Amino acid sequence: MREYAIGNIEKAYGKKGVLRGVSLRVPAGSFVGVLGLNGTGKTTLFNILGNMDRNFTGEVSLRGKEVAYMRTKLPFPEWRKVKDLLSFYERFYTFDRKKAERMLENTSIRPTARLRALSAGMQRQLNFICNFCVDAQVLLLDEPLTNLDLVFRGFIVESLIERAMEDRIILVATHEIKEFENLFTHVTVLRDGRLGPLTETEALRAQGKSVEDFYGESLL
Amino acid sequence: MDFKSNETIYSQITEYLKKQIFSGSFACGTRLPAIRDLAVQCRVNPNTIVRVYAALSEEKLIYTDSTNGKFVTADAAYILQKKREFLREKSAAFAKEMREAGLDGGEVTEMLRKVFGSEEERR
Image 1 (cartoon, rainbow over the protein chains, first blue to last red):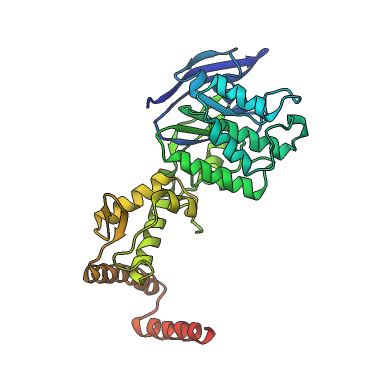
Image 2: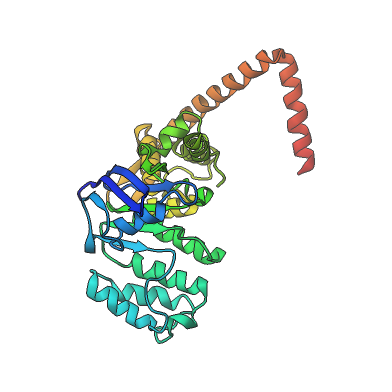
């Protein structure tokens, strides 16, 4: 596959510049941790990369069907049914519906249930399953483990390990470094509207630094 | 597995597998876990396991059978030789540390005897 290139993205809310020239080049097969304090614009950036926000300047090499995006909340009306979501994904993306249905069978989510009948955790499960079953080059995950029990957290981690065997790209915005640090091939820190250098995690460790040390230093 | 977060995961898993091979837990000719399975078990990126297996192949401790996966070498004598090298390196590093702390060979031997003795009593 191609490299994933993001060039000079800028975005402001009113006069307040949130993203002030975000650039990144991600090699195929990378599993990247996008770190940053609350309010630094991680979600704003992911919304742009994940087709949810067209109001920005800059360039992104893969868009539309090539990008699946697990947001913190499901972007669908609460009265919709689970199976409506599957149909939506099927129409918009190259989507493995059979696989999604199989994965749902291992949860307590019924295809006929309405979204409002699902707990916060179940909505997160559905959200993950839908986006995981999209055949896209890029998978974006915004705090994917929030609200989830131990079992489903484990399931997500295992699913992502499976995905990391392929040539595709995974980007995770998270504060849960401990759960992900051994999965990341690279990390980068968003701060003051810009992304720091894409840094290999094993190269950090070879210098005697943990991902947390690196993150801490990047915030100084 | 518990990993130290400030040492390469690659070297920690490599060492873990070497110990498994040297101790006989992974005996001569045993089939090694698939990359995916070991990655899930260790909860690490599968690319790391690919690198680990490449390093062990380079050292000829394991080999790849193109259809059936990775296996520990069937050459027991070679494993024994590699085990001695490994232990010699570990001992040399330990001896250096003890010397730096001011202990001589006799004292270290005495200390080790006590440590091993009390561990065996506990069993």
